[in-house]
Image (cartoon, rainbow, N blue to C red):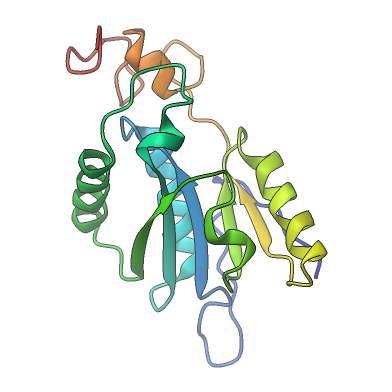
Length: 182
């Protein structure tokens, strides 16, 4: 299988016989704290790739794994609740499951799935997942990389910048007090 690489700007719908989405099970992972417009784009792409009848598995960094970050991170249950609220409000039709992610691979090495949605930062991890799956005799999965979302100041939106007070979750050059000086 040759991986297909796509960007968030490409709204591709892959269909197989019968009109169902080609990809039924899609994985995506992250810390998602705070949940910002870049994360939302990543998640939208995952749900779009899965299709209405598909499934999205979201690996959410455990508190221990998230502790490696350069900025403070809110607790797992707080982040999970925020993620669920946003997904439910977005009205996606695909089913989803959120599972703890205790390392960069999570269940991606052992679980059967069709595609992995990654960011520019996590694209190398996606390639590594495919290398390890191949070593384990598992099929490689398609990788879809989204482009960085730019803030109003022309620099990438990131959780670190939000926690530094440079921007808010929407990429505006206005800090959110909730995340500054934690």
